[in-house]
Image (cartoon, rainbow over all chains, first blue to last red; front, side, top):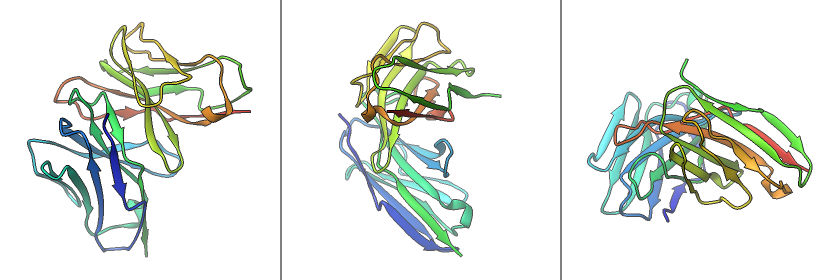
Length: 114
Length: 114
């Protein structure tokens, strides 16, 4: 089955700096890669996703890049703000290529300091 | 309001006492899934369902059962709970196909088995 590794497990940045979280996956058939943000005590919420026919996607201060050859994808947050502090999870879809069989990474706790 | 509703939010039970965690979605989604979240392990998929009467095992299905008799409901059943099933559980749903926008998660159920 799919295996997703995520690094780093914790990340501390100063407000205004950029943050990068990296994930690798094992199943070359995976073609859907969402990122979720989970604030303390809350549910995970989808913040951005990318499909294998796209190499990069941006949404305001966040962007995701995908390298299918190397089987890795990354989340980039620019101009970080205190409200970006949360746990971020990457995920990859399984055999079907839909959202049903999603395998998650172990999470990155991002802390944005003033 | 489009949502995934789980009940209960908190549950403390004793080893061996059967319990059911309910999950309902009002978005007419085909896909539903159960995850458990444990510190350092991220979100691990227990079971998922691609439609009514179609379910499949995720990565950690042992000790759990599910059913999908109606499209909107996807209950998680623990026939004989054990302390290692103490965890935070999330139900999630998604629409089908490549246009899927990832899972929408419920608010979570914190289960303690003593």
